[in-house]
Image (tube, rainbow, N blue to C red; front, side):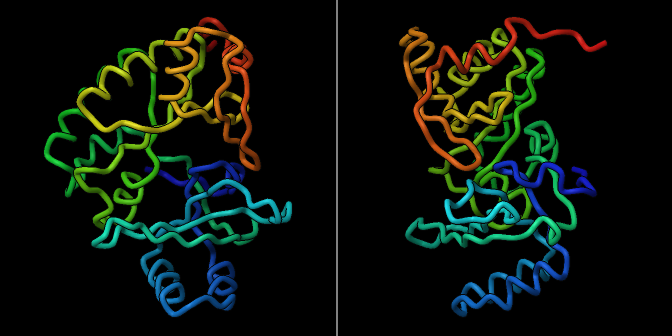
Length: 242
């Protein structure tokens, strides 16, 4: 699970960012209540990353919007801390963890049925040439080894299809495995447009209408867009690398 030495992709949603000392110093000097201060100090001490979120409307071009999610409290609420950092405060960054790495790591604390189901999902996706990534509670638990996951938690997955045929195959496999696991997550198209795979399946597959619309999340906006246009952003078949 390597990190990039340069924050070139630091602004992409769900990416992990590690701050330099100047970044932590500025965040800690920025105020906040006692709980937030204690959390930030603990995060710095443990050298844990922040995760990129959608941009705030009022954020400047030089700022990257990030956040921390804490493990759920006894009532199931997951406290979150929204922050902003500057690009020159990012020491390193990386894309979300791949599902295959999470499966191989055999994380402790997962609900009993998940390890087998995730292994099976990874095997089917690998045969289809698809590499899924993880975000949300599963990613936070992988990063911190804290108890983020419960039996009622969702498994948030990122699916970045490289062709229309791979899009169809991946959604079909996700829908099948969702009968056995609480799968959720997003399809991410080449330009960064992110769509709930469940909503995509409902509108684009079961609805089967190119004029149908889905809710699309982009780094700084959310809007309804046509499934036909999103599908057309992918080649029909995956091209072979030279």
